[in-house]
Length: 199
Image (cartoon, rainbow, N blue to C red):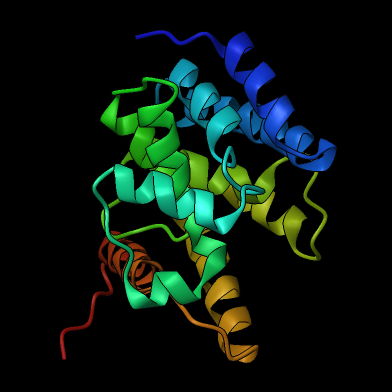
């Protein structure tokens, strides 16, 4: 199903700050690049990129409402970690307000921050596009972009290492989905290299 991206762009422009709006457009562009390289649906990737942060700057209480009305329950960790809230409420908003029913697209929005075990190709594309978009300027972004052009799994593993180390170093909560994503990606890389060790 094709979606009206012009409409979605107008919606996020009204909901996000200028910087976050530009970021969303850049993620959409990066998502198309990755989708075309790795064989994902480029049109769906563009839409997911536009919408991935649609609830990023919304008040927590409004995000809670959308999540609750979508039939989801937040864990205690999610209640205490506002950084992961917008991916959950974003998927709920896309379903309830924008009428998106595509599970693959909703899943890409839903897990773009934490990742999860056994992600789909589109989910990996959006997760990685969020790290390499043109507006990103963190110290290792050039390395991340280079890895993204070589392997989604290598790029994700690099970003997950960084994320987990950063959160642990700041004594911040780490979502179980992020740890599961890390383990899942590492398992696949070890299997690919033929060096999987059984303990």
